[in-house]
Amino acid sequence: MVEAKVAEQTCLEIAASVASGRRTAESVVAEALARMEATASLGAFVHVDGVRALADARAVDARVAAGERLPLAGVPVAVKDNLCTEGLETSCASKMLGGFVATYEATAVSRLRAAGAVVIGKTNMDEFAMGSSGETSVFGRALNPWDTERVPGGSSSGSAVAVSSRAVLASLGSDTGGSIRQPASFCGVVGFKPTYGRISRRGLVAFASSLDQIGPFTTDVADAALLFSVMAGQDGGDMTTSDAPVPALDELLHAPAPLRVGVPKEYLAEGLNPEVRARLDAALDALKAEGAEIVEVSLPHSKYAVATYYILASAEASSNLARFDGVRYGHRDGDATNLIDTYRRTRTFGFGAEVRRRIMLGTFVLSAGYYDAYYQRAQKVRSVFVREFEAAFRQCDVLLTPTAPTAAFKFGEHGDDPLTMYLADIYTIPANLAGLPAMSVPAGLTSDGLPVGVQLLAAPFAEKSLFGAALALERRLGKMEAPPAASGEKV
Ligand code: GLN
Image (cartoon, rainbow, N blue to C red; front, side, top):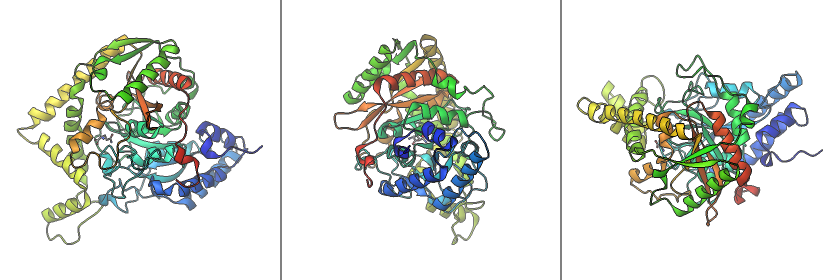
């Protein structure tokens, strides 16, 4: 029997064929590397070591031959460049960490490898995960495979492009305010941010520790469940991981469709882009057809989410990024003559404009005299969001919202105004503030042929409800096709 091309399969199918000996992990990885090469102009990958990936694949083949049962046998995965990987550079797309090779591997990545996955490269991103378009990367931009004049979204730009273009069928991103879900929506793939504390952040270069979560990009919902079930669970290396039992893959794949789907009325207010509205309505109809009752809920403080996030995320970032001072590791300016000069020159050169902006904002809101007015107040507003979501989830099993206010926008569209870019996360940020699991699921195309995702949210640790709803949606709407450009040899 001739096996289908890797690019046309799912992770579940690849793992099954490698585990049963129908094909080798080495041949799968070789095919993925060739596909990566053919789509190189999209700029998804920033560090690749093909020789090492093939050697890792042969090691997986040996484990399969020895009788190990590997749920991800031979599945090639791409990893965002802010996740530490042994033997492969981790630069956060920043000059500050240029050439840095971590001495240990992120727990999420180690768990994928232990399950038989093969890391085939590190992906492009906004510098230190700050951005919504991929444009702040020191490596230059990654292109949206659906329309290369448009952004793929961010900050996990390369991880979304790698899956959308089918160089790989799974990748990892990090999501602090939407960085998995928004690029997933723009690129027509599934993007999943688990409950805060589900997946260990050990080995993830911290942006805002109370908001960051690692999660997968995949071509369908079942593959997202597969990667989640492998990565989730308590880890001694991250004290914020929860000991709550992780649902087994089978439970996730057979989770029932939701009975009650809540729609926050504030999200449907005037001003919602009509193309996005049309896809949201299609998703609502799909869930209704699956038997769900649609209920209106209210999240009255939603309009404060973006402001709250940019105070808290910047405050945490200014503290987390203080370690990049030219003394311990990373870039160090060689011409400085004293300590202060070392800090100043190192950090001025090492960080790009957006990262410096966040550090300055964060330092400001944490400084004496402003701490109470901004940081502490934002913390209080954050607890209001938690309570509002608790109330909403008493009325429904999942919430359905847009993922992003628009489909993918053009490069440079937000020009020099960072504030308009910040609004790209208006629908995704609340899940991070409240620690909720949330997923962007493709919901069709705009009249211009650009993909649009819708977002599902569930109560903390209610991933089963989330997957039940996502599978129901996918069943009705159909799986999103690969972008037209991704089907050819060259893009
Ligand atoms: N776009 C948001 C920001 O720039 C979210 C980033 C993220 O989730 N890492 O902060």
